[in-house]
Length: 324
Ligand SMILES: [Zn+2]
Image (cartoon, rainbow, N blue to C red):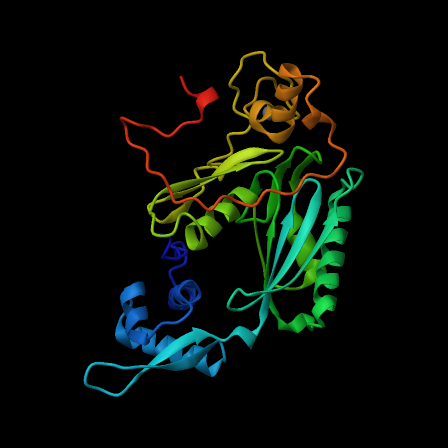
């Protein structure tokens, strides 16, 4: 289970340890909805005094509220705590290759509003995409009349390898971007705390916290869209690899001299199991298939909510065409 927030070991100051401890408490409250101080002490491994002190601060700030009381053994009732839903809001932005989706949540992660815009294939320059993100963000807040100062942070998912520590889009093959300082461009426009990463990492975090990966220490969350890849959680931590590209295997060559890939190489995995690759395979197998001539826009698939399966050395999990 993803339960611990990593502390920046290069700067182990009292302040960032305290910040990491606060995040652990908030994270557990978000996952469980309600908890007592005693439960939070057990869940985080922090001392009673640390939990009591941090919760007192967060109650003063209005981040945490008492949601009721629970009976305790022999003593006075214990307070049940929860995150204060109305203490602010947060926004998630999914920048895909053909659309940008915006979702607004209160601080207990209840959905308040949604907005989606198409991303025309002609919109390719970084500043154009930034302008569309800012415009869509403003439209989302306008829909519910939420003042901008109520937003405590924005999470933005950007396709392609993204260097989370520097905020740089390393490579976006669809748009021809290389080393674009996207986070600083967006910070100038939005002037809010931003958390940016690529969809593989966000998807893995979402599955680990709220989806099929709950209670599992090690998992891979696969994404099969226009691009393909995986987000990895190992021993309870998001795994980035030495160059932050762990799970970016869409452009690994599986067929020497195979199909042309949009990255310029040939025979990449993505050219076979990405959505355009699947359509190409269908066209090769059955060129008259009615699926190739659909006039209506197909419904978007919802993520699968399957219980995690466990592989063993004797019985590895595999997808048939790729297994020998
Ligand atoms: Zn490729």
